[in-house]
Image 1: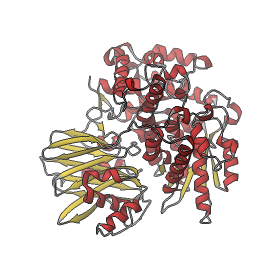
Image 2 (image 1 turned 90 degrees about the horizontal axis):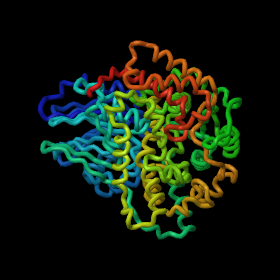
Image 3 (image 1 turned 90 degrees about the vertical axis):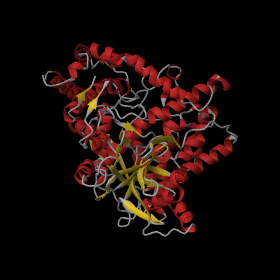
Image 4 (image 1 turned 45 degrees about the horizontal axis):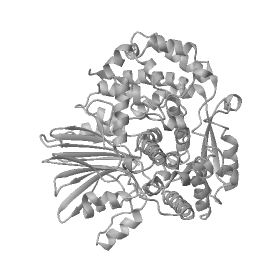
Length: 616
């Protein structure tokens, strides 16, 4: 995994702008601490920061290869999981390799198949290729959007990078935010509308999309989308295929030339990854490293609730003993969670999931002390129907994003002036309708129940899942840790998408089909353990700390927050924050009232640190 930057300009010689490329790459150094490189020509420049995982010596970038006298240069962030299959195809076609990196395989794939190379890739990636024969810059992003790619496009130039901070390091791209950006921050965040970079004039290449730009202009197209097909397999065949796809995806993602481990919570998703990884390494007489996170005081203050029915620790211990892993228990304390709220903003370049972000950042730092690659269970809930909005009728029928139904809480936060400026309810409604228009089926052609589940599934895959993928990428890569997400294999997503809900919801249990498909791999009690989300602190010190920190900010005359929020409402919320009846999630399952205060703390820091200017 790495960080990439690039700059194409048709009007001026940018080969002397190496310092700008260096400054952009500097911001991505945490993503790629092992080496860096740049490639400069009059019209196109690339930069790269590398986290070396495969072919430590032979995979350095930017990388150039030639065919028939034409040069092709790549800057690439990602990992291919079918490298050897593609390599065999290319060898058959007469290509020779100088190393064994997936970077070289990807570059030669482009040389052979051009823009269609993306159809052959199984992996997570964002990359840019300069094609000297066509005088074209080609950009592409993986199907699920695991790896990020942002860009700024003007008439005669395009500048792209893995992260927003790298674009903002370019002297021609100011940190400005307009009304649309403010609406994203206050009404959609910590999610983001696909394609939007929040900052003015910064866009995101959407998942499953390509971009090509030459002297005659720019073209963007979608190379992959979910397709509506009739599911013809019976239940037994479906179970068999799901088991194969999940097992194959996990096994493929164990390839690494550096130490590897798994993130283990004791839940279904992380446990199956751990079980398969541990058994695979055991065949090589190796013990798998596993890692879990908990919080000081949780053993005292944890109380079961609808979203978190039991603590993780006993399940982690059971799994570690069962599969003989070398386990590392990592415990975080409240003061460091609060301090790391700022670091999490720097990692994400935006206010985000508060301590849900900062805890993962701290967790990743500790994991990095032992391994460079980790596997994690994200996205199984999105794909197999694990979230409450797949099972609660009120959420399923909500005429908005079902993880963000409490819009009243968001509206209360807005200052009256900001509410007028951004038309908050209209903004959310428009974004929701845009999502519905993308649905790959005609609602009139199917029964209502099927439509509801497909709608919820599509919204979750395309609007909620990217939030978690953003979080996973930014918080882990900020520490130089590569974390892979096997459930995001597009083959799993394509197949499971069309499985009827009655099969997915086997035994009327969340992810029932996945559980049944994994029978025999996990202990029965782990297999059927009730879903529990990413752990968070239950220590009352967290609420006390964010209350105090936010009070200090609101009393600071230099803050811009009072221009954006309803200060009186926030103070009232803080005064009554200990009332559990007021503490309902305003986003997802974990973002409750204390996380709202932490989000505002992050927002204040973001405005200051990024010197954000408003363009109304």
